[in-house]
Image 1 (cartoon, rainbow, N blue to C red):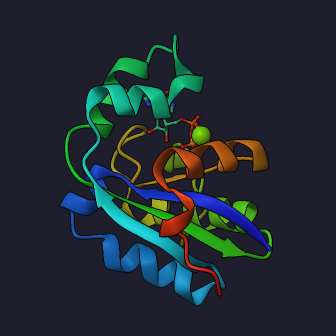
Image 2 (image 1 turned 90 degrees about the horizontal axis):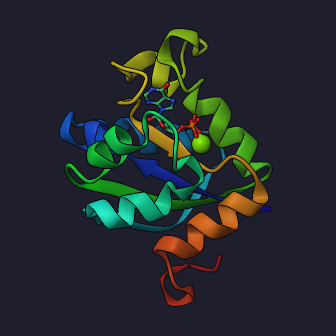
Length: 139
Ligand code: IDP
Ligand code: MG
């Protein structure tokens, strides 16, 4: 069993894609063990994406991530990190495999609907960034 952090980004929430994204997780063995809707401020978005500090898209990305509500979830399952990344598709929707969330819904390399942790260490950091232990369901 592995855990990963998923975010339905502000574009996904605004465009009414929460249900579609969650349906894909539920159908593919990724159990939601924590979930909430948040609206990050700029500083919170900068802290979350600190690994990208200095990249040309950092300021625009953190503006976007703080532009509206997002849904943050912890997903649990076998190979949850890789499985979530597979369901998401490549960062650039133009390279995303057919049938993935980003291929089906993304409109832009930045506004790509979902976030998913990329490794066990980043998953641990990202889960702790949004959730305390009382918010995580044990099942
Ligand atoms: P990931 O979300 O697939 O893990 P990362 O490389 O970690 O992709 O980038 C984080 C986020 O930054 C992406 O999901 C996307 O929203 C944005 N991003 C990545 N590369 C670019 C770019 O070249 N231009 C604009 N935004 C980008
Ligand atoms: Mg990433």
